[in-house]
Amino acid sequence: MSLRTRFALFFFSLGALGVLYTAAVLDLPRVGHGVGVYAATLLDIAVEETHATDVVTAVTFGYRAIDTLGEELILFAAVIGVSVIMRRHSDERDATERELEQPLMVRPASSESDAVRVLTAALAGISVTFGLYLATHGQVSPGGGFQGGIVLASVPLLVYLAASPERYFRLAPAALLERGEALGILAYLGIGLAGALFGQAFFENVFPLGPRPSSVVSSGMILLLSLATAIAVATAFVYLLTSFVEEALRQRLAR
Amino acid sequence: MVALLEQLPYLVAGFVFGCGLYGVVTSRHLVHLVACLAVVQSSTYVILVGIGHRKGGQAPVFLDVPVSTPAVDPIVQALMLTDIVVEATVMALLLALALQVHTRAGTMDPDEICRLRG
Amino acid sequence: MRDSFALSFFQLASLVLVALGAAGVVSTRNPTNQSIAMSFYGLVLALMFFVYQAPDVSLSQLVVGALAMPLMILLTLSKAAARDLEKARRGKQP
Image (cartoon, rainbow over all chains, first blue to last red; front, side, top):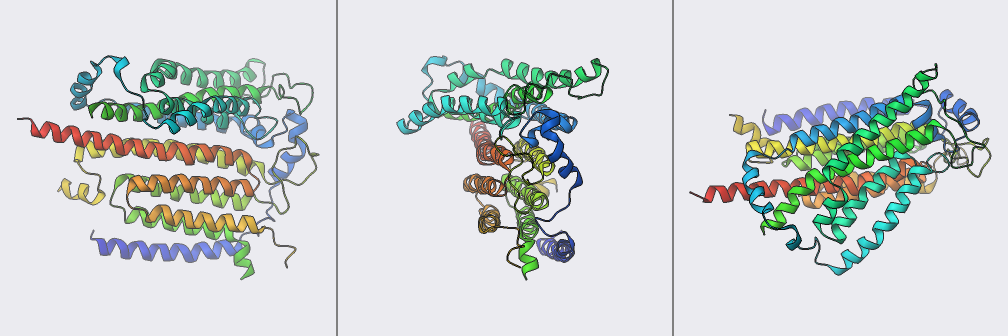
C-alpha cells in the first residue's frame, strides 16, 4: 500500500470518526452533571463500611480487589514477557563475557557530574521515606500500594546515578527481584483466599477493621493488599528497568 | 458554542487520539511509534476524567472533611489507575519487541522492514 | 449560564496544555528528543489529574509517565545503538 493510499485512507476514516465522535459527545450528559449510581452509593457507605477514608483505595483494594488482581497479573505477565524477549542474544554473549572479565571494583561511577551525584544521593533517602509513606497510608490519604511501589522503584535508579553500577546491582539483585515479585503476587492471592477460608467470598474483607476510619492501621484487607501490591509493583518495575539498564552499562564499559 | 466548551474534556480526548494516530501512521522509527501509541492511550485518561467529574466536587478523600461533602466519582479514578498500569506494561513489552525487530531486521524504520520481507 | 458551568479556569487551561503536549510529543520525530517531550507530557497529564481532583491518579501518573516511560524509551534506544555497534564491529572483523 503506497504512502498516498495510506494517507487517504487514514484521513478519510479519521474524518468519519471525528463526525461520529462529535455527534456522540454532544449527546453525552454535560461534564460535571454525570449520573453514577454506583459512585453515589459508594461515597455514602464506603467510609463507614471499610473504615478507609480514601475511597479510591477502598475501591481499588476493597470493592474491586479482583480487578486489581487482574492488573497485578498483567504486570507479572509483562515482566515475564520482557525478560524472555530481552534474554541475551547469542551474538551478545561473547561480547558481554569479554567485558565481565574486568574486576568489578575498577568500574567507574555512573556520572561524572558532582551535581547529579549529590542531588540523587540526597533524594534517594527522601524517596524511600515518601514511598513507604504512600504505600502504608493509602487508606487514609491519597496514596496506596501502587503509588508507593512505583516511588520505591525509582530509588535503585537514583542510587545508580548517585554511586556506581555495582551498588545498583547490589541493591537490586535479580534473585531478590524475582522472589519479591513472586512474594507480592502470592501474598495478594493468599489474602484474597482468606475470605474463602473463613467461609465467605473470595476477596471478602474478613480482617479486623480497626477502631475508626482515620487511623492508619485500619480497613483490614485494604491495608494488607496495599502492602502486597507495593512489593509486587516495586520489584516488577525495578526488574523491567534492570533488563534495559544492563545493556547501557555494557555499552559504557566498551568505550 | 458553550455546549462544545462544556464538553471540552471529550473534545480534547478526541484531538489527542487523532494526534497520536497520525503519529503512528506517519512514523519512521519504531520507538517513535511506541511513544505515539502511548499518546493514543492517554486520550482515554482524558475521557475518564470527563466522565468522572462532578460539579463542585472535591477529591474522594474524607480524612478531614465530613463524609457528606460532594466528591467526584471514585470508581472512574480506580479505572484510571488500572489504565496507567496497563499503559506502562504494554509500552515495556512493545519496546522489547521493537528491540527484537531491530536485531532481526537491522533497522528501526517500519517502512524498511516491510520492504525487506520482499 | 455562568453559574452552571462545571469547569474552572485552571481545569480548562490544563486541558489546553494536554492538547498542546500531545501535539508536541507526536511532532518530535527524533526518539531521543521525544523522550524528553514525553516526560513533560506526563507531567502535564499529572497536573490535569490534580486540578480535576484525582490525587491518587496524579501520583501514579507522575512517576510512570514522567519517569518510567521516558527511561524505558532511552534505554531501548541505547540498547539498539549498542547492538548496531556490535554488528559493525563484527562486520569489520574478517
